[in-house]
Length: 257
Ligand SMILES: Nc1ncnc2c1ncn2[C@@H]1O[C@H](COP(=O)(O)OP(=O)(O)O)[C@@H](O)[C@H]1O
Ligand SMILES: [Mg+2]
Image (cartoon, rainbow, N blue to C red; front, side):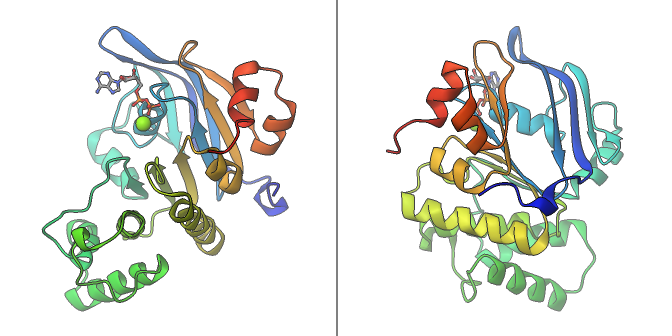
């Protein structure tokens, strides 16, 4: 499926310009620039350890890059004061790779946490929002379950419900389907596409699952561990067909496992 026509010509919501990131003396990202447009599903791909999670952390203001600029709807994250950063981050929903729910709390309690922390809504309204978010991810009726009573895919969906609690404009998902079976993984892909279509939420997703990338991405960038830069950018189908770069071609033309 190509990028739907109505996703073209939308404004950029995230602009990354020439960022570099280091851990101590180890360079991980060098001179990375990209734009994420409103309402698109933008996927970051590349082999393990190439800096995908680091780039995501830069984009949500959790890691300050050593160089460059990141602007979210016009606010520069790199130079922002803490308070301004907090304000911008309220507009983000995030599910980390290890994004565990709190095991001793029910799903309803987990999902109400961001609402209790960031709003003054009365308890009945929070309950209603929690029910609504669980319905969105097809977990109606699981309000009183503990995370340990759910399958891996259901936990991920509950994590998405929590990330959606504050109606974010941008949803960041790191390795959503890592370690899940193909059927569960395909279900999560469908959910991501449905949420994007229904709510228009901009999605920034880290993935190395080729099937998933081909299914959901409007646009992808591929990071490379040795050059620490972007080696491909664009529509995944066009990249698969047209890339002249061996590393890129091989990644996008792997046999599905
Ligand atoms: N907190 C950290 N301290 C030191 N090195 C790190 C840290 N986080 C990640 N790294 C290193 O940075 C590189 C990129 O990591 P990461 O962004 O997690 O890659 P990916 O998500 O693509 O697997 C890896 O070599 C990793 O070992
Ligand atoms: Mg990672």
